[in-house]
Length: 211
Ligand SMILES: C[S@@+](CC[C@H](N)C(=O)[O-])C[C@H]1O[C@@H](n2cnc3c(N)ncnc32)[C@H](O)[C@@H]1O
Image (cartoon, rainbow, N blue to C red; front, side, top):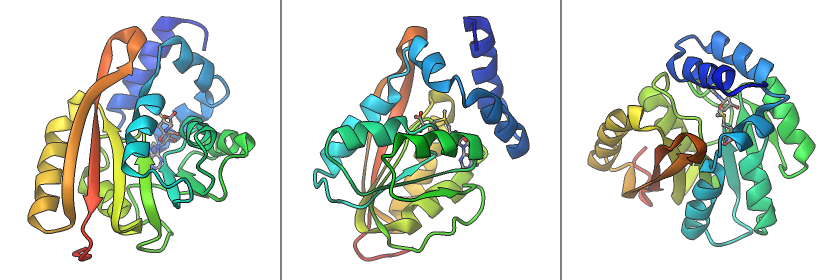
């Protein structure tokens, strides 16, 4: 992608897209230039999200899942910090190919978070998901992410302000039904070049496995 207006338009289209097939096509077209494009927009969410995630999960042997790994920006950061046991998933085959080329993921899976993910329950010490949450997911996404996390494990995900009210309600529900023990939210930069902020939401899955 060559100019800022085109990139702005693409991001806007992705934020408002309702049809998963449309989203897939957009990421197929974007995969080749994604890293450079977002670098030029000052996309700092992977760095900020990874730093918060590492505070939750300091054990570098922990089994981690990068949900919506895209081209692998989060996996590369985790790997550079010494984490070696990282899996990832994404529904775009083109983004997954880029992630595979980084050599930082043990297993990569094509998955759609509006459906049941073909991963066993209680598998990961932590799941990180940066730049992925959208209004299409509703409570299904959080339910699936918590399902694949071990009791007492952590989920860290980013969410744009546009979705935050919905997310705050979902998190309250998870507290009420006993699925999570703790939650915290950090507001920080998302795309610095655009002055865009995001909420980084951290959840600890209950040790009593209420799911
Ligand atoms: C903005 S990118 C973020 C990628 C990476 N986490 C990062 O920070 O660079 C969003 C990713 O979510 C994936 N995605 C979007 N909708 C999805 C869905 N329904 N199921 C699985 N992955 C999805 C896209 O294919 C894309 O790779």
